[in-house]
Length: 89
Image 1 (cartoon, rainbow, N blue to C red):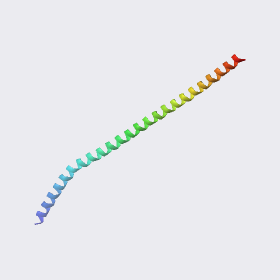
Image 2 (cartoon, helix red, strand yellow; image 1 turned 45 degrees about the horizontal axis):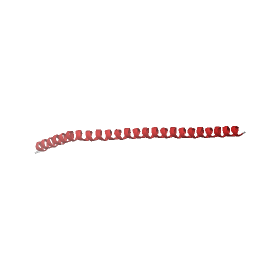
Image 3 (cartoon, rainbow, N blue to C red; image 1 turned 60 degrees about the vertical axis):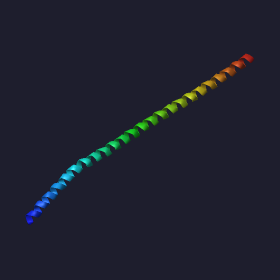
Image 4 (cartoon, one colour; image 1 turned 90 degrees about the vertical axis):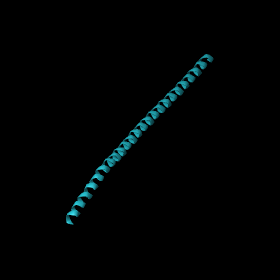
């Protein structure tokens, strides 16, 4: 009887180890998938931040250009007024 329990224990241990070995690959696959997904999200976040940064720089350049254009228009208007004043004098 004692030997029967030992054999039964060995069989249980054998089946548990087979189940563990089979499930271990599934577990590792899930872990790899989670890690890959996390990495993809991080890369996408960095890409989005880079796009936003470039867009902000583009808007700043446009604003700077518009400001300079207004300054030039103002200077041209002042020159035109001076020209008119000189003609009238």
